[in-house]
Image (tube, rainbow, N blue to C red; front, top):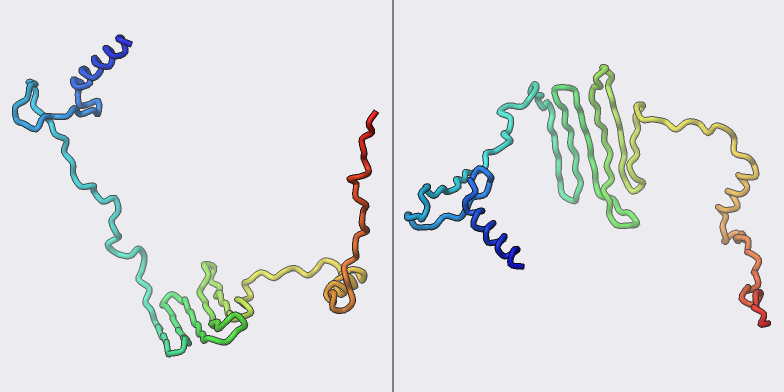
Length: 188
């Protein structure tokens, strides 16, 4: 135990003498007089330099806005029409309508722009209590069902659609006897 205490005392004394280039700075007394022959060094701190600067000008050409019509009357209805010099166009209008869950905003509109290959992309949409319904020739279309649905499957679908109100009920499972009495241990 004496060796551990002695080693600790020696390491504390030597730590004060480490050069500052090891990254360890020893505390310096606050008075100008020092028991050391070397001058007291104080760390210097400066404010961090910014690593990001905003661009001075926008990259690329400036695209003019040709049309910007916005209408916001009372009662939640709105409409806008925006067209830019590079061929982007967006129109939308909406108004609140009553629904089962409460009032919802029914919207309709379209947007269009030129694709890199020169084609004009156009999408029209309606969004109301039935959801978002886009229409465009560019949207993928589900393939046709590969084969007709068999008659027995159609009958099952219709039977399930009728449900319990039409006299249909799910088949009941036969009841099983309890197995708790089936396996009795015999005492010998």
